[in-house]
Length: 344
Picture 1 (spheres, rainbow, N blue to C red):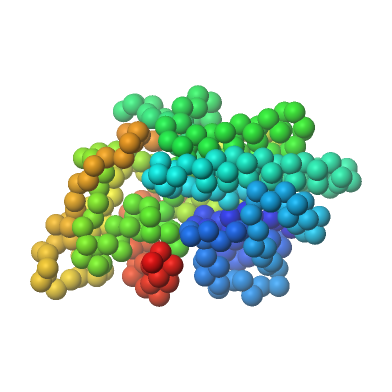
Picture 2 (cartoon, one colour):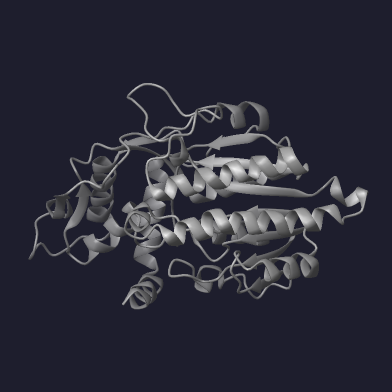
């Protein structure tokens, strides 16, 4: 089987490609335009495989997408290419509208035109798998969980752009019979995550002895999903999911942002003890900063559907996954340094 992955040099996309090349015998093609958050170093360990190909292209380029579909002839598409950081969407929404909405439209059209030319025996196996976020559902009160039928109520330009892309995928399924699958995941964490998200930012700033920024009072609640668990769920949906269906993928791990930062500090005390000359404990570096505009207070995924129908549950607890993540950043300072140099 030939699998096309968009955004395969990013955090989740690269984890998916590593899984596919290490754990399956599929051929994998990666499309990524290599923005600030994407790096081929994320897949350097497996990029020499004779089952791997890379195209440096923008999913908004219709001619390039049509050409790649014709050249690759994929059986399955995992669409992960997206602008994904809420803060950046607030300060510069245009890139999110272009990539997440226009890019998804362009890719859907390339997939549709390719699919309609396939012989009937190959059509039966083709899938367009759109990977989205729980942020499209907006805010939750203390009780309740996001289900696959929760109404959309996005709060930021990022989540609004992802909601729009979700609607486009469903429309292409209903209007054009494009065989699609959709998944909405909770907050991912793990190795190779670009240090603009809470967990890698906290780890690297703590190691540098810098203040650890926490928005507002830090009581915002998120459900955390270890990235390797996520990609295994994506593959399970790809193999066994029902066409046109949506599957929520969550980690069953609700934690406040403040408690996440505090647990990282505890792991660092164990794994990277400091000399105490500038601060007594890593927790002393915690600094509360002005809250993000429109900051959602709680996300929580109900992953009952994927558990009951496809038999998937996460393997990592939050503590086990977080400890692995902290250890990875400690052991991969060269990668961290290369990211910091790119940011400069």
